[in-house]
Each structure stands twice: as C-alpha cells, then as structure tokens.
Image (spheres, rainbow, N blue to C red):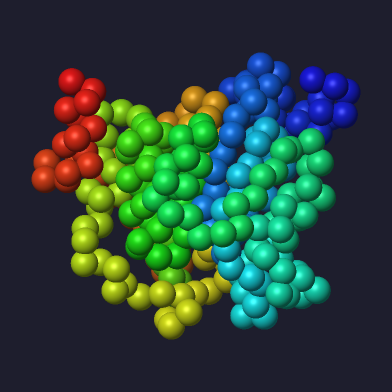
Amino acid sequence: MNPDQLARYSRHISLPEMGLETQEKLLSQRALIVGMGGLGSPVAMYLAASGVGTLVLADFDHIELSNLQRQIAHTTDRIGELKTHSARDTCRALNPDVRIETIDYALDDDDVADAVAAADIVIDCSDNFPTRFAVNAACVETRTPLVSGAAIRFDGQVCVLRCDKPDAPCYRCLYQDGDEAAETCSRIGVLAPVVGVIGSIQALEAIKVLTDIGDTLESRLLLLDGRAMQWQEIRLRQDPTCPLCQERTAKAG
C-alpha cells in the first residue's frame, strides 16, 4: 500500500477490527452492484470511498429529472446520461484508485450468471422482482453472498443472504412467484433519505461480509418504519419447498 493509500484509508486502518491487512483484503475484492438508482448510489459511493478494489455497476437506464430527488450519484447536468456512466464518474472522483466496470445493457440470464460468478459479493439495488429473482438465482447457482435492499414510501428493508451456505435461505424463500405486481416507487413514491439509509446499511453489510468483521444481517430481515423511526428484525429460514434451495442442498450433500 502506497503512502497516499495509507492516508486515504487511515481511519479504517486505525480500527482494531480492520487494520492494514484487512484493508488490503478489501482492495482485492470485486463487488457487483445491480441498479444505480436510489439504493445503488450510496452503495457505490461508500464502497468506492472505502476502497473495495473493483466495482461493477449494472444498469441500463438513463438519468431523468425525477431521479435526482434521491439518486445522489447523479447531477442535473448529467440528465440523459447512462446511470452507470454517471455513477462511475462520481465514484472515480471520490477514489481514483478503485477499478470501475460498467454493464449498461439489459442482462439476460447468461449475462447475470457470468457477472455474478465473477464477483465476491452482489449487492442488489434493483427496483423490480424479475431482476431480484434473476440475481438471486445466479447467486444461489454460483454460491455468491447477496445483500438485498428495498425502499418505498417511508419504509425500507435489508438482509444478507449467504447463498454460499447450503442451509441458508435465499430471496425466493422470502418472496414467491406472483409477487411481481408489488408497488413501485414511481407509482407510490419514496422519501429521499430512506433509500440513503437502506443503501448505507447495504454498503456496511457488504464490507462486513467481504472482511469477515462483526455479525452481519445474515438470514435476518431488518425493517425500517421511517415515519415512526422504528426498526424491526425478522429471522429468516430456508423454505423447505424452495426449488433453488433444494437443488443447492442436494449439490452440497
């Protein structure tokens, strides 16, 4: 680690749980972030600033004026640009040492599988169930840890799904087919700081998983009621009828 890096990450290195060796480990990790909107913005920015060595930013949308209320990686002068390119520029301005790759087209199942397989961790910041299901399936298949987050209105949720462990639940254990008609922020709305809170927790959990520090939200769903400023935690268990988990357990056994 060069002198500039020692200075940049000095507050991390000063932490007894981190230190120089763990920070160097973080610099060698590769994180895939799916979605560069309200959740993906703080996730990408915090992981870049923290020194996660390679970030892969996946999103095919372009920036619109209505995004700027909550998607803090983007700016007014970038309206019309690809979100991945805007987020890349923001992250590079924060930390030019971090390698950033972009996927700025719609991913089919093979593309998702390849991108997930190449990552040490996946952070799902998407806003629709088909994408979440596809990412989860790829994580289960490749045994890649997944940090999932969502936010709407004043509410948010986040959990860590250890798809690399045969007895851990996956996203399909939490949501089943038929949930695709759920509410969306574009129709219902979302308070801007809520996505910042959830995205920041996703970034924190991703760093903890990558560095094996502390207790993560593994198999725990953390729920935020922003209006009452109350948190609730629900323990998650593997659904014995989940076909993805059944297949994973069979392969592990």
